[in-house]
Image (cartoon, rainbow, N blue to C red; front, side, top):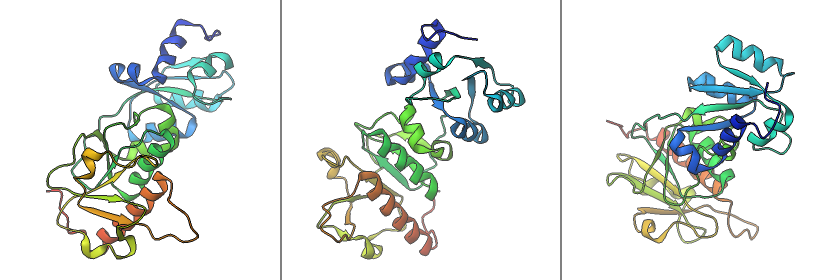
Length: 254
């Protein structure tokens, strides 16, 4: 059992909270029984689990799965967890390397972990891939994993500086775009769709705005100026998924 938050192993794992240590290691931390269950159900490689001694459910799970389990005190757990009052468990996850298959893609250009996680969860809900563009938060950061609520294990996530030349790129603008309600005739169903979601304050970087094939706007009432980036992305992704289904899913990944 690890007693101290200054323990050498705890210090090593705490470094995985930062991207500059996660990427070279190829590992990240995930917290809580739900994320641990989602990771295991997907076949992801869980290298180690750290839990409080009284966490009998995690002990049973690790015994059943043959996963190394380390008991820790609350102080030690708090150093590697991302929440203020963690109950654990915290697992060390080998970051999955699932390759995209060329399907419709949510292209992230957001730095806020909550927005990124929500959009990954949205992509998972509608069967889209995920690409991370310039300035995007590390999708495997513990905060993003928590916001994704398991969506990470149902999608392929890859980095992408540019959208494929054959893809149709769709983006939102608060005003002046094609109304989302009327977007159907403007879409090319023979092409892969990339929905790019930028920062709420800055929008899509200028060097990528020129790549957008179709700008759309979400009809709103009540004097609301704009929507949260993740909310807008989820609404548009849902609408595009509906239209793809209504068109008989004519786009072929081959």
